Picture 1 (cartoon, rainbow, N blue to C red):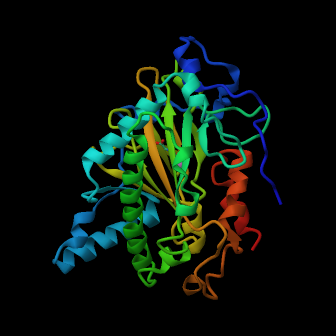
Picture 2 (cartoon, rainbow, N blue to C red):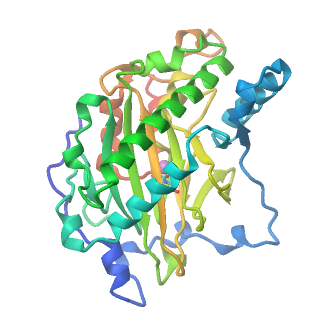
Length: 362
Ligand code: OGA
Ligand code: NI
């Protein structure tokens, strides 16, 4: 079995510091091979632009049974056809969402030496980081991040969270609580849509008190040559489900649809939800995690908050028995999330290679 590396293979360079040094061309370690570079045609207005589905969560508190059923069906279609959707009227305070983004922007705007006190290592990834994967000589992504554990409570250690700005810990505790609650509601909708008992997925994740939830705050600095690099390379999220709070002003997230990359247009105050590899496994691939990536630009930096809602890391995750039949045998062998995530932690973003390679091993 792969084990965790203790240290980064090369000296860490903070992309934000690099960008702020005012360079006009980017170092070669950020230049993607030609075939992986973003192409502009996809975002141009003459290209027809489809949008990911938008789900109105208020409809689920309606007394109107037909309205509820209709919205449930729309969630089902979004999960099957896109693996991505936006949610509005989710009940989380817009003020809190705004504060959460602001405190992290303030954090990234602190002097470098303050941020370096939180420098992370590949053993746990907690803290201030600038790369995913430990392959020496890898082509890197144009972003920095901060990674922290929110759930389970035994892993939540506020002393590992930034002490500055002084409101950060309080704001992020509140934000985490609300977002985790939202995640639970969405898991219920997915369970029902899969024909399972409404608590099925939450229970498989270890139940309310034991689920895993980690926050990855991404900072994408301005880039003088955005056509040569990516903010995050194509990947599917290895965990259960991701609840993303995107930047209000700057688009950047792209979702793969067939051979195209669709740029998501964030709706103000909405969250973007996407399915991760563990729900693909639990649903026996009725739902699929979808590849996505982030493009950067030369005009504005971008901040996003990705809450990864995951199974308790030592539980075996395998296709639900209810979804395994003679005609549709189990596509994946049982595996803990602890084992599963080592792959991305060692190799960095690799599209959907991991979950697809698992399917051939069962
Ligand atoms: C991620 C991710 C998208 C974004 O952190 O896994 O895909 O828009 N982020 O920052
Ligand atoms: Ni992602």
